[in-house]
Amino acid sequence: MSNPYRKDFPLLDQKDRVKPLIYLDNAATTQKPEAVLKAMEDYYREYNANPYRGLYDISEKATERYEEARKVTAEFIHAEDSSEIVFTRNATESLNLIAYSYGRSFLKEGDEILIPISEHHSNLLPWQQLAREKKAELRYLYLDEKGHLKEEELEAKITSKTRIVALACVSNVLGTIFPVKKIIEKAHRVGAVTVLDCAQSIPHYPLDVTALDTDFAVFSGHKMLGPMGIGVLYGKKALLEKMPPFLTGGEMIDFVSEQEATFAPLPQKFEAGTPNVGGAIGLMEAISYIKNADYEKIRAIEEELTAYALDRLRELPYVTIYGEKYPSENRSGVISFNVENVHPHDVSSLLDADGVCIRAGHHCAQPLMRYMEVAATCRVSFYLYNTKEDVDAFIESLKKVRRWLGLGD
Image (cartoon, rainbow, N blue to C red):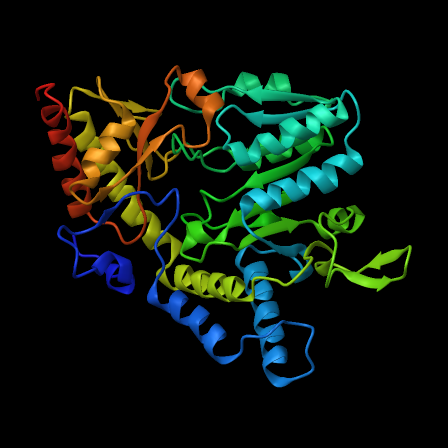
């Protein structure tokens, strides 16, 4: 299977490795194309300076590029105004900002927060803490045996008491694609605010926050070919303007006296301290790469690989697949599975001996693990630079696992 993108990723072509690197942990983080690495290097080599703070050439260029990254990000997700884009460290920080700033300001005792049982801890713990502090109730939407949200759950649990509905567009464990448009519409009918965790979806599917009419959306750069340490919070301008700052300090102020302060307008109000300019520039270049690659082509590669991997895994009688076991329009390129009588950590370690990188553990989704009645799973996840040869190498290595442990074929 030829792949036109693989050549752009230096880490996938390390000549000094004993065995080729088979990287199948893209739901955790993606590799970085040369263009992203170069854009960040250029910043640090040629115009490294604090934005906003210096009335000299390289500071002004840093400011210009940082704000260009904001504008590019806004256009990428179809935000109506670039001031609706707040740069954070990651999706986790973005979710905490919403819970702390919006939730503390507007949630009351007896209100309800609703999330699926499948949520990553990043989109669970902030709401858990907020509910405890505000004496609100955190409620869960449960899944069917294929990992889909039950219709009766949505009907029964989105009520007049619901104030916040927060969910991932795609499950990082099961790969389920959730019907977020329908959920947003149901939430808005009862006056609830919606929060979308797009960290697992935006590398693979376009995001249009205006068409979805979501109130908030978050994602991380590192899962979409960008660097670590840069995240995005989108919020409707009317909501962000009502919210108090999350962090305070330099750059987010308008005026400070000994006892009082007034804060800068959006989005600076939420960006205290020296920003991650290099990260924002890297994210901008990653967005450019994804746009040039084209989401339809990315999706075609992933659908082919996912179908092929599911076929190969179903051939192994000792493998259990969680969620949808067959290709589906509601399934992304994330596959969780277990090998009979072998702990996922052992599977991952043994595959690593063949240069195959997969994830093993609870995937920061322990409530889902308990709901599924497993302690942990193995997980493979694909991106645009993966090939059928990668899947074949993974399957051949997986076939050895039970033999290595003396469990037979």
